[in-house]
Image (cartoon, rainbow, N blue to C red; front, side):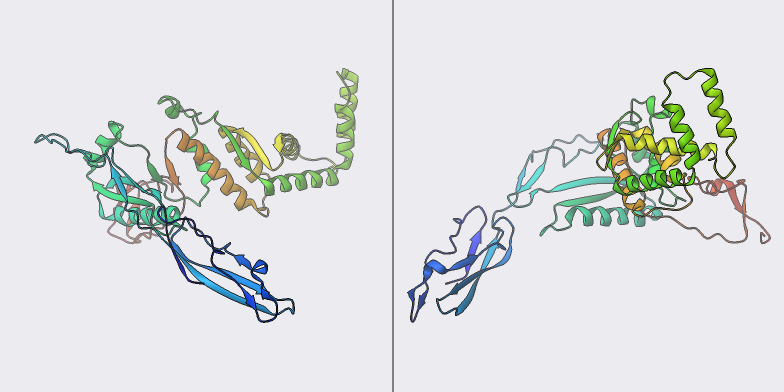
Length: 381
């Protein structure tokens, strides 16, 4: 038995039993009872692995041995698309990465994204955080990095020109003053029901969305059950009435009179009735734990059913809302609109000499920026 070195795409696939024989002083050759466990070995990923050999004789004596398998990658990276460039003086600087790809037999494509941002001091910390976060996500679990975000600081003029010329594939944006309510903001700002979205050809509102909401489904079932338990008299009258096909005016009048005859404790409010009917409808369109609807309808459900129907948060709500965020962001990526960032909230502490001209703080515009504030001669209350 000996250790093995395997070179990816070059060595023959090893047979870990080849050449191994086992003899016992009483039983003789017992190689047929040898058990070889090579389940931990991954011949496609560089690393060090262990193969375990186990054998036992008729008397129950057991022997265990092991070898080390070292998997290495000696194949160089492949870069294609490199060509000579003729650059004319005073012409725009060429894109030196255009048409160039880098591949590796193990890691596949090495993706590099060029990320342009406005070159001011305050931007560097934010863009550095974006770079570190995205690279950590995409390179997680990889032996070597497969993703790089290349930061390119440019002037405001250059950034505006890139925007006006459509010289970009996607944009990243963040918002100040939020409480990480990503689904609601996605529904408000990036909804094509807004004219400024339709004018440029985007139609997110009608995009189909399928999202797993197991915890929300459980909560809606529980809320329905609670409604039925609290208002059994109303439910009995309502269920009897809706079973009547084409009710007459007298039957409708009798139903309304019976409802009016209930006590205040027996009668749900109009809002409770509307929510109950919404919950019942939503539960009918679930397929298993999955809800399929449109981008805009999902936004409406978030604001008027999932959130505002109760003062308390239900178990698993955060997980389900992460699913909603991912589903809505997928629609945006499909239409190449933007990748919103909702991972942090900024806090600013102002001197008590600052005078604000804005009437109130705005969730997205803050205090209106420096244009709407100035330093006073006296301390402010």
